[in-house]
Structure formats: structure tokens, C-alpha cells
Amino acid sequence: MRFFFRSRKFKIIAGITGILLVFVIVMQILGSIASPTTSILGAVVSPIQKFSTWLTTSISDFNTTINDGQALMQENEELRAENERLTNEVLDYQEIKEENAFYEEFLEIKEQNSDFVMEPATLIAMDSTDPYLGFTIDKGLLNGIAAGDPVITSAGLVGYISETAPSYSKVTTILSADLNIGSVDKRTKDAGIVSGKLSLAEKGLCRLYNLPRTCSVAVGDYVVTSGGGVFPSGLLIGTVTDIKAEEINTSVYAILDPVVDIPEIRDVMVLTYFSGQGETLPSE
Amino acid sequence: MVARDKTKNQIGYAVFGLICFVLYFIQYTKGYNLKIGNATAVLLVPIIVIIATFFREWVGALFGLVVGTLMDITTSGSTCFNAIALMLIGCASGLLITYLFNNNLLSALFLDFMFVFIYFLSKWLFLQFFSGKSDAVQYLLEYSLPSAFLTFIVGIPIYIIMRYIMKIINRFS
Image 1: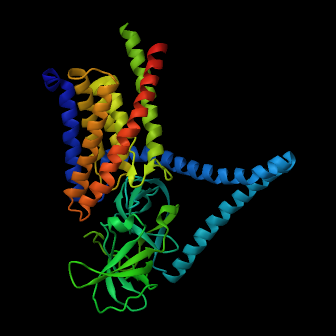
Image 2: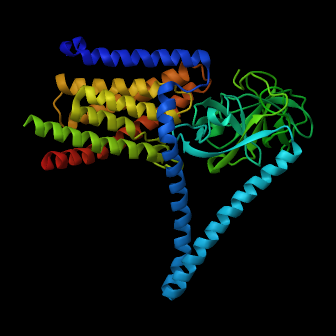
């Protein structure tokens, strides 16, 4: 083994480790930009990831279609063929309809917020080891997306861009403990901070904390972003499902059920610009 | 004989490279469900250990570097962590099998167990504990350790399958 440590191979491996460690340090200083190695490989891999996600979704949709059609197949072969043809047409139609509905919903948001500049993006990979359900989208620096940009659906806030590369970006969701969003109760105007917690993320929930004990927040209230820098004001985050007292101080916190069903996300919009957009990251 | 070994190795690299690539997409495509409770099996860690036991330290490190970089594309907040960790795991597995262990099922399982736990513990240490995450201990107990155990268990059939593939490659080249 001593021979190995004196060999050129060992020096190469040690050199690569050193370079990668330098990348880690530089990326920590620059913040939220993917390393050159992952950026290059990411440019190659992103289209394939997009394809594999599309394939999985299509197989799942197709499975449902086939199961529906099996009863007809047993009754009549002709009807089955006809049914499949029609189903395929319906699927195409539904796809177009869904796409239209997706853009229509955002059109409404765009009409209400004329300052929003939005970039549509599609989920291409989900980190199955991340309990906070972070995911990767198919757009990056080349599409004008920058670290810290808010990510939304027509329902409300999903999270923010935590890392960008030329052809892809990573999204940190509102379930994550890394995220702190200034928020208010829409009804009572009580202000707090929305953040995730591991035990809540398991149930798909997050929390609004730092609320004074005298606040009037109630179950069923809607919580929206308060705005100022990182997120525009008025983006819907979730509804209050429970209110609990903090153990370490006198404040209370509300448990929120996010309006966006994060495990079911397929398409999102990235807010690349809105008036009042600041430069600080949500985690700072 | 040397030319035959070279061909055999090249076929092996291609086949195992393809397996890594396919497993990567399975692992990170939405809908992946090799999960039990909070535990998620990370298929690519045992694969690197197994490849290193077949092709030794240099190839193990190279496969670890490429697969780790791929994993860094999709893992949140892990700038180069997977690339470094898997490259070192691949290299260390290859070295141990060359200089210390016999290349058999038992030693492969031992290496799989050891490096899977080292991977998950170091990931927890660098990405959770040293980052000062408030839920770090809970994360270790509820996610890291169960995932390490599940990954090790899943690594056993993967080893048997890959050993079989290696035998086929040896027979036909």
C-alpha cells in the first residue's frame, strides 16, 4: 500500500481532491453558484433528466389509461382499439388543456402584478434523500435565473432558487429549515417568520414563528409574504392549522399547511424580477 | 492474454458505467420510491464500492468522481461533497481489497457496510452538524442512520447481480 501512496495515481487523486476542495471554498465565498464540474456535467445531464421525468410521468399516465381500457378490451376488441385511439387523443387534449390552464392562472397573477417578470420551468429531478423535498428545474443562469429568485405556482409560494448553473437550478422549498420568510397573517396583519422544521416537513407542513403571545392569529387564516427584498409582498404561503406556544420563550408559533402541494409539483414559475427586489438571500 | 484482459476491462467499464448512469436517473427521477419510512436507499454508494472491488482503486476513484459529481447536480447544498466522498470511497475500497482483504462476498459486504455508514455519517457531519442545523441530531437518527442501513441491505442483492454480470463479461471476453 506504501507503493500506492508514492505512485502518480495517488498524486492525481490527491490533486483532484485538492481542486474540489478549492471549489468548495470558492463556491462558499461566491455563494449559490454551482461548481464548474457540476455545471458542465449538469448541461449534459439536464436534458436526459428532463426526458426521464417525462417518461416516468407518461408511464404513470399511460398505466391509468390502460387500466381504464382493459374492461372494454375484454368486451370488444374493436371498441378497445377505438378507445385507445380516443384516449390518446383525450390525453393530448388534456395535456394542451392543462398547459393552457397553467399559463392562464399565471396570466391572472401577471395582470395583478404587472412588475413581475416570470420564467416558466419544469421539474427535472427530485432529491429523494432530502426530507425538505428540494428539487432541480430545467432553467438556469442562461434563462436569467439568479440565486434567491422566488419560485411560485399559481397557488402560491414554493420556495427560492438556492443554487444556479447555466442550464439548471436547485430549488429550496418552504418546508426547509434553511428558509426564513418575513410573513403576515392576511386577516390580522400579525407578522412573523415562516420557516421549515424537520418534524413538520415529514408531514408536509411548515411554521410561522416569532408571533407575540397576544397575537390574534386563528386556525384557518391565510399567511402571505410581507415583502421587502427577497420575496414580493402578498404571495400566498399557506393556511394556519394549529397554534402552539414556544418552549424556549414567550412567543407562539402557528403550524401552516402550504397551499402548494410540493410532492406533486411539475411546473413552476421563477420570478426573475419584481419591483423592490433586494439582493439579500432568504437564508441570510 | 493482456489484450484479452484489456478488452474484458473495457467491456466491464462500459457495462458498469451504463448501470451507474441508469441507476442515477432512477434515483433522482421524481417518483423514486425505494423508501421505507424516512429511510431512502442511495443505490450509487454500494455500486461504487462494488466497482472498486472488481477494478481496484484507480477505476473505483474515477467512477466515484463521475457518479459523485452527477449526484452533486441534484443534491441540495452539497457543493462537491459527493464527488470528493465517492472518489475517496472508491479509492479506499479498491486499496483495501488489493492489499488487505480477499475479494469475496464477505469482504465486499463488510466494505459495503463500512463505506455506506462512513458516507452517511460524513454527509450528516458536513451538511447538517457543521452547518449548525438545529435539527441535526434528529436528522441523524431519523434519516441518516435508517438510510445507511437500508442502503447497505439493498447493496447485497446489487452485489450479487453485479458479480453475476462480471462473470458473464469474463466468460464472453
